[in-house]
Each structure stands twice: as C-alpha cells, then as structure tokens.
Image (cartoon, rainbow, N blue to C red; front, side):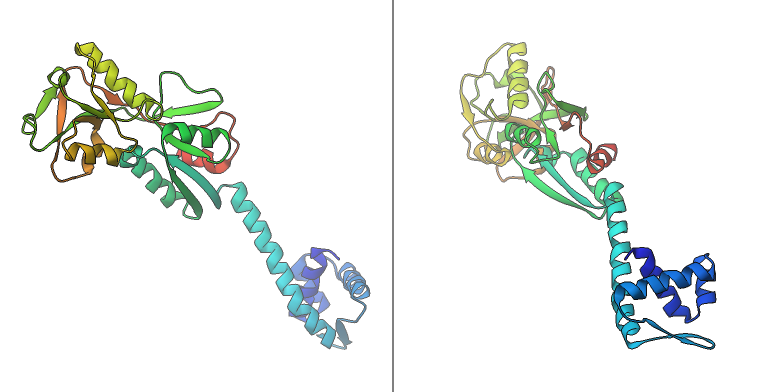
Length: 289
C-alpha cells in the first residue's frame, strides 16, 4: 500500500463518484478504478458500494477513511517537518558565550535578530570561559560560541571578528581617581589589580598586561577572580581596581565607578567561532544573520 493509494481513496470518498475524482486527480477513470480495486484487495474488504449514480462508503470504508486521513496528514506533516529542518527553519542551536560577552550590545542584538528571523529555532545557551567554550565547540557539545580570541585562530575553527570594544577602569567609589573623567594607565602602576586568570581569560589578561608594560609598568599585585561579576564585586569591596570591557559598566554595583582610559588603552576582542567545516544550515543562518 502506497501513499498515493490513500490519496486516491480519499478523493473518491470525498466525491463519491469515480469520474469526478479522476478529473480532480488529473488521471483517467480506468486506472483510478484499478487502483481502488487493488487497495480493496490489500485491505481484504470492499471500501465502496457501487451505485447506479456513483458510489458510497461501506462500513469498512468509513473506518478506513478515518485512519487514511490521519495517515495522509501525518505524511504531509513529516514532509513539512523535514523541509523546515533542511531549510534551517526549525531545530536546535547550542550557543556558548563568555560572561563578559553577554554584556556586549552586539551579542544581544545578534541573538535578538536571529530569534526574530528564525522564531522556531530553539536556543540552548551556555555561559562559561573561553577555554571551556572552545572545548565544547571542538567536541560537538556546542554549535557556535562567542569567545575572546587570542593572537592566532585555533585549528579547525573559523572566527568571525566583531568590533573591538574599548575598556574602562573600575575603581571603588572612595578611590582618589573615582571622580576623574579619564585616567592614564600609568596612574595605576601602584594599584592592586583584580583580573581574570590567564588560563581562562587569556585574551583579556594578555591585552591588559601588554598595555601596562607598554606605558612603563608591570602590575605586581594581582588578585584573580574567575567571573566578571566577581571582579566588579571585589572592586566594590575595595580589594583593588580592574580593567574591564566598557559594556561591563552596565553592571551598576554600589561603590563602583567606571572611568575611561586615555592614551594607550587595551581593547576587548570578541569573535563568533564555528567549526571550520560546519555543515549545519542553522549555524550558517546564525552567522549570516
């Protein structure tokens, strides 16, 4: 029994006339009659009772019609579902991002635009540091990630660079620099720094250290904090100052002030990363969006 047999049957059941059903199916009547007879032979019971002016459904035909409608509808739904997945209209996207990247307005805008364009895609979000996000991407646990790139591109990945973001100095509100509009990095040479650990925030850590060395000093008192929220809260606790991406200034914590950096200033690099030979149409749609 093939799907076309069910469609033929349902058309005859709707018209209750072989001639009209054949016309709507765009086939001649004899082949249609033969297909219905073959279907009845497969079922093992007559589905139609022939009348002088047409046909009517038998009891078996009525029972068969109910299930045939469900079968055809299910087949059509299966075709539509497959087509939607093939075109990237439905499915899942596993998206990773760093804690600081979540505050970047470009990231929020891209996710928003993707959801508006592809509303049926289910997003599964994971926040972690760059090291673990890279592992998740390479091990196929994630599909695409926002990461802080280093100098070189990791093997087997493709990076799509976003615009570099300026960085600001975060200081306690009681700090002597708190009321300045801007500060030169050299003014921070004697300050205790609160930074991401190099192992998980390599790009940010290296960028800050490189810029400090370029202006003439090396931070020698460094408190490590694993999350951006921890950094800001430790600044509020007056344990030191920090240098953070400008978008982190959205975290308005009591007793913390954000100051622009003048002169040589570090930048926060950000990129969207995918596997180099990614085939997923959903990932490609996300990148294109």
